[in-house]
Length: 384
Image (cartoon, rainbow, N blue to C red):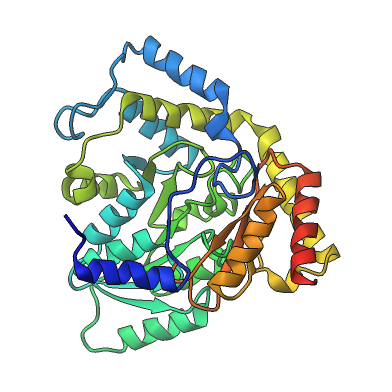
């Protein structure tokens, strides 16, 4: 059966704009594209100890068998959630099947009809989708601009119909820019107006802190944040996510978050991998230090080669070079890939038109030589 004409037209328009998405094939290029910052996705030790944990727990089953509220709450769930909560110095943790599920579950459920959500304009699609499903009103503020945020708060609080609660939403590391907000300034602002601060730490876990605990905890501001969303598909190299907060918040989500209630739980193997990845994070000081050294080296080489003006400021594992136009950025990416480096283009409409970019993801297993070479190639493309 043919696709409806309206859908065909939308696909054709994407193709005409050189923005049609497709599923890439596996390649053997030098990895500057994946989110596997510490190489945990390929870590054989984590694979082996995860399997052994299942054997030790006598959990030789392939699936959870149902939602966690029915038959799927196998013994590894409370064990892993307790470990995560302790690691992140949080009262409680609740595991979701993915970062997307966690954000949709939280934002569609927690803010109420008389509440207000103020979110950074560059927040991830999963946050925005959750907000769209919420009954609360929502307004975006300019990226990392807390003067703009405070103006919004003043505008809202000067209204005679005050919101019951105000939620401020941001990310500790933004996925398409790699930059971070000033968290101290943000927490002070949140406290000043009695707001509930929610921070997505998807690209911070495994990158910041002495044990990769994330940016919020590394600057000792975790007790001032109402909820943190930790995603495991990046720095931990596995799958799933957890919402960190109070026991009351966890209890509320268990009772009302539809993306938690109405889905089959993660398999024992998936939860075992989460737990063992966290345990590996504690002892994997070398990988974390290598990643931090590579971030420093990348920034130094940008300076040396005169590429700094091209890049969005970042001290994270994500570095983005703005090359406007889908055709231009795709052509540059193809040149780098032809030379053996997997650097992906980020096209509009994923980012705003004119903000198309090359996205470099750094890892503990990239060498300094690889970083220097790929940036020298970029320099030759840009300054030819």
